[in-house]
Structures are given as C-alpha cells and as structure tokens.
Image 1 (cartoon, rainbow, N blue to C red):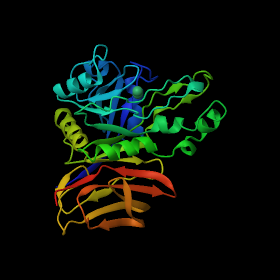
Image 2 (cartoon, rainbow, N blue to C red):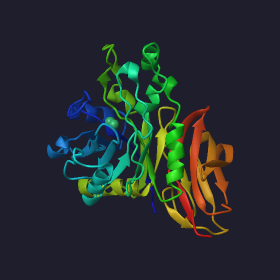
Image 3 (tube, rainbow, N blue to C red):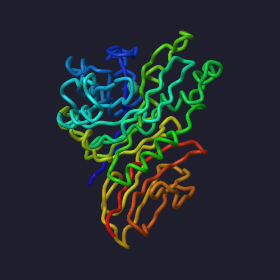
Image 4 (tube, rainbow, N blue to C red):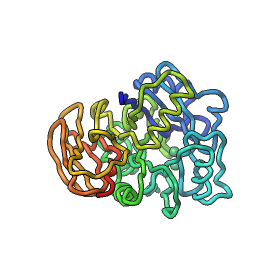
Length: 338
Ligand SMILES: [Zn+2]
Ligand SMILES: [Zn+2]
C-alpha cells in the first residue's frame, strides 16, 4: 500500500458559534499553514456545510462537523448529515445518533478542569459507561495551553504559548490506555481554535487561526487523495475511524513521514501475535522514541528508529520527544491472540 501522510487540524470554531473567524479567514489560514485538511466544528450547527463550504479550497480539503455541547460531555461529530441536538439526549443517545448517520465521534477534552479566573467552566467527560464511540481527543492545544495560565501569567503565555505546552494530560492518557485494553479507541489531536479575545482583559486575541494551525495536527495515513470531495471525505474519515493516524506538535518540527508499523500493518491496526512479528517506528529526525506496551514504557532510545519483537500480545504505541518536549503520539498497534 502506498500510504500518504496528510496533516490537518481538527476542531475549529468559526463565527457560527463562539469563534471569531469567517470561513474565508479560516481557509486562508489553513492554506497559509500548508494544511492538507481542516475540519470546522461549531457548536450545534452544520451551517457551513449547508452553505456548501465542504470541498477543496486551494489545496486544503475543508470538512464540517459539529461539536455537540451540553454543559458537560462534549462530543465531536464528524461525517454527519444532520445537526444532532443534545437537549433531550443522554451521551449514549448522541453517540448512537452519530453512528446511525454513518458518522464518527470523539469524546472531547475528557479531563477538562476549566479555569475559574478566566471564566471558563469545567467541562469534563463523565459518561464513561457509553459504548460505540470512535475515540477521544487526547491532546487539545487549547486545553494544554490553559493548564498553567492564570490572570498573572496570561500575558506571558499569550506571547510565548510554546512555554505552556506540556503534552496530553496524564489523566486522559491513562484513560486512553485503559480503554484500549478493551477495544480499539482512536486518539486525535485538536486545536479547539476560537481566535477569540480573552475575557476579562479583552486585549489579546487568543489565538489567531494562523498561529494555532501550526501547532497540534492529526496526520492521517491513507491511499492518495483524488481531489474529489466525496472520495477524499470518505478516505479521510475512514483513516480517522481506523486510527491510521498520529498526533504531532508540528510547531517543534514537521513530523511528516513519521511511521509506526509492522511488516503488514500500520498504527491503528490489529495484527496476530507471532514470534516473527517486528514493530518498527521511524522518525524524520532524531528524537527520543518511547515504545509503550499496555501503558508502560517497554523500550526507549534516542535516534531515528526503534524496533521491538513483541514477547506478548497487547497494545503497543509510540511517543516521541524533541529536546524533552512532547512531539508525536501515535495510535496503537493492537497485537492479538497468542
Ligand atoms: Zn467543548
Ligand atoms: Zn470546542
């Protein structure tokens, strides 16, 4: 298979909910950032889709989903045709409705703590009993950035946002590792971009789309795009659904070409355990590579590749760090049987 690596951003708000940007501003920023795709997801609306926004715009495949956002338990619905209302539904209802429409869905900011000093409410995911969701938002730029921010440090972190970024929060990582013991659960990275002025100071725009689109991307691996909306939409969503994807903080360095695979499978896949199986990760540049087995580091090295012959079935994934900073988190390879 001729796997292509396409990078894009997921979870972008526009004027149609609480973001500040018009469609053309968002697309302009996506083009400038060199994104292969961009998925706009406003709260409780598919208005951009209804207005015909989906399609190829100067080299960026633009798609529209919805952020289903009751007070807690936010869910990102992609590939759906009709707006889904959370008013009368439990989380399982809207997860089911996304599936019924042939879409895929991701649990959002599962460990959100909010930020009282900035007027941001706590919005965690609490409904862990739900079944049949596709995956979760493991690394959100917005929430990672917010972590160390308070009224005093706000100006500093607005000017030096990279200083605030510390990787997916421990709680979400732990939860993901726990969930993948049961079944395949896809992790995505997101920006949750609003390009909004910060209340109460009202003087900073946090953050312009142009800036945020250079940060956390989800790279997908698929057969080549055809520059046809219907076909490429299917390819993109199918790659995300299967976890043929990795998250990368591309601001540190472009991760294009990063791989985690076996002889016959790639990240996101299930493979049969065999004594001949070899897991290989390769990086476009020297990094600290950590192989994780069932949530624990099993092997690590500084270099451009790492290999392991699994001794047991289980869930294997890879993390990469550049100068101590979190850079790449791949979806797992699920080694079954044995
Ligand atoms: Zn949300
Ligand atoms: Zn959001």
